[in-house]
Image (cartoon, rainbow, N blue to C red; front, side, top):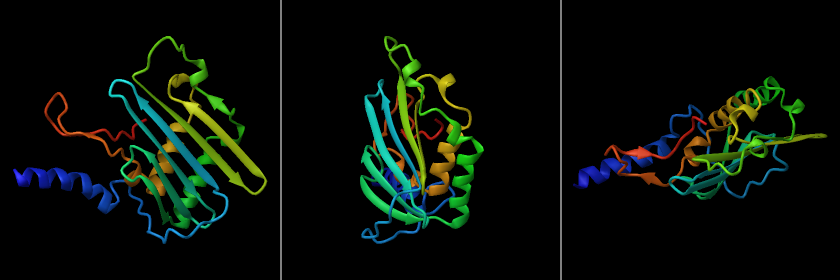
Amino acid sequence: MNNIHGLFLGGLLMPLLTGGSSGAYAESLPTEIKPGQPIFSLEQRTKRSLTNQYQEYRIEIYNDQTIVFHGIWNTRLIGEVQGKISPKQFSQIYAAFVDIGFFDLKSRYGSELRDKRIPLEAESEYTITFHNKDVQKTVVFSNAVPPGIPPGMRLLIDKFKHMSGARQWACPAVAQAFPPHGEFSDVCDFSE
């Protein structure tokens, strides 16, 4: 029985200890480093009504390639952790903003188009900000009405999570150990 618990615990901790499967690893920094205004930020709030689970976190990336992850609710890491990404990863995130025409997007997409009388199984709201010198743009969108999501936005979010290495911290801490089919299932879902 102890081996089963050890395997279960190891399965939960291994992605955290190894940086998960994101392919990006953030180098830990002392927590007292507080860079200036973030260049890129991504905030996600997710509500899954069937399981009554809520998740919220924010990822900030600064000009010196410092990333700051703020685990607010139901993330693998609650609180703040800092790391560093490579200049190449930073450039790839910047290129993703340019590729989707981020600066030409409206400021809000999605949830305002949805019929509020129809309950959702899950809804995620994202707030994405680009701020560099005199240029600032924030776009808020919800997956409540997928046709309302601007083209490329999901790819931008995926690139943001992947290149920053923040998936290792964002994966929800609450896992469903005994789902209906009997297999272990982590509630972490990055396919949105």
